[in-house]
Image 1 (tube, rainbow, N blue to C red):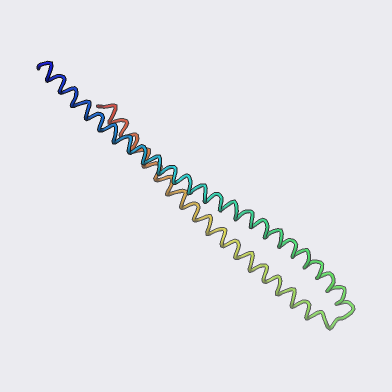
Image 2: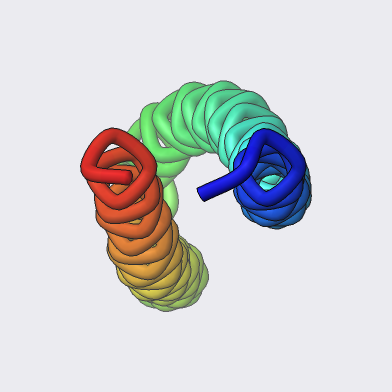
Length: 148
């Protein structure tokens, strides 16, 4: 083999290696972009969950305040019921309705929390699966590059 042929073979291999390196670079850029996008979506979901938790805490405080007010009202009703037996039935029905409404609100909150938890878990599974696929591709490309 002549020197010129050797140089040409080296240049061909170098060009091939550069093409493969460019392909790997593009794949890494794509994987990094996808990972960053997934991370941003996870951040947005985390922010939503944080906002939801804050809203839930605020609602819990409001419910506590309502319950405190309700407790005060019940005490007043008992006081008046002792003096005015005829009004007891009406106050009792109002309080039962409020308690049922609070139970409905609480049940609705629990359903919403469970649904959001399931959505979060599904998002996390899909993101993890995607990252694992990217990791396998990178491992394969690195092994292939090492073997050549």
